[in-house]
Length: 303
Image (tube, rainbow, N blue to C red; front, side, top):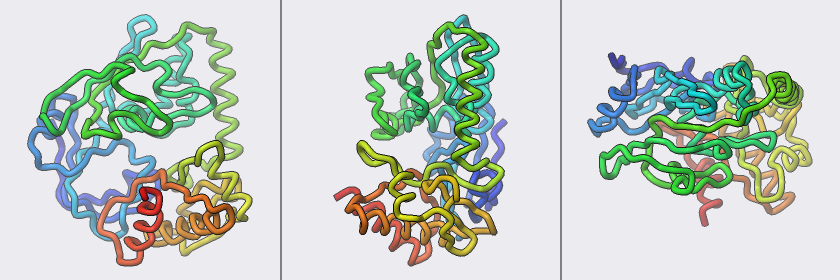
């Protein structure tokens, strides 16, 4: 049965470990309950693992559905069927056990399938879209459950028909490749090693990459050239091994993070006339300064 909480403190449900209280939070236990909640029109948004989310340190005047309990999955040969709340690393390990290749890159992704499909998660020359067959989505405009194939999903870099339209992923199907367990394990080992060398552990509060990579370039490279590694703002700090990550190293607030993001954004804009686009989502009641800086970083990328 769906669990519902009023004035729910979201801080510990995010990888950033930042945030105030949500007006209402709902946790469905299965897809049918999820659809019922979506049909109710009571809720403002849907979130999964909150691995790329910054919640305001102020109260969050929203009603949110969380999908983390939608974690059923099954394999039929090389076909994977999974609900939207299943985590990437779990499936990566299960594929390895079964000798299935294509999701080795997910070993380093903290996100769940709903968000990864929406943003077409990718790394190490692999992407969610590569093995995608179809998914069921809830159309918030028509209140209908529809099925979308790969072509209809319109996958692009960090983009899809889900992110462009008012669709919410319910579950999905993928077709993996048959492979060698040892080879798959070796690729996963290298991916983990790469992450450990360059990206912070989620035990160090962070939300993954802060800015999207600009066309034919790397946000991390540009920020590194701007000497942003180690720069601090309150309890937030740019990771010393990769300049496109921000750590919550000392009880950072959302204002600390947004102010530091703006410093990063401004340095790259001034030095290279490139306007970085935030990859994280900022949710909640923003302070005046937070709103001002966020508007600059987002609106200037729209026009």
